[in-house]
Length: 183
Image (cartoon, rainbow, N blue to C red):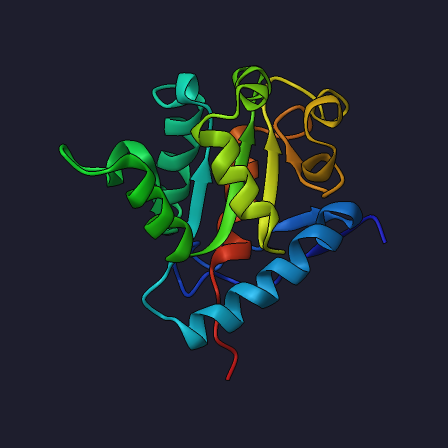
């Protein structure tokens, strides 16, 4: 099978678009989509996605991805929008992680440089790796480069803007996170 249409519009938020995944992408996305649906039934108040990114990407690639996801109807926890002045960054991140169904790790050259320093993105990554609800998205780098820094994250199949546009990647992630309730 070359690819499988997800065939699951995001509760109207993707306008009924059929989203196509490669076979490898579907092997990654399908279990996460099922988990998102289960989480939505058990915890309807949770956001669809938590966006983990390098600090240096917050005004560029991370903002672009967040804006695309939101335009597609996904609810996204993004530090630039969700941490208010005077709030504890780590505490707000902790709440954001707890209140999200799926984590996205935006893997960029900046993230690859920041992870060895064991900063905030490293803490977010550690929390996400403890779940089975994480999608790595490579942007401007490769999964081979990620393997040198985080073999555990690189071992999870993900999506890449080297293979698709950022919009296509966002569409695939938003469709997976849509948490359509088939009951």
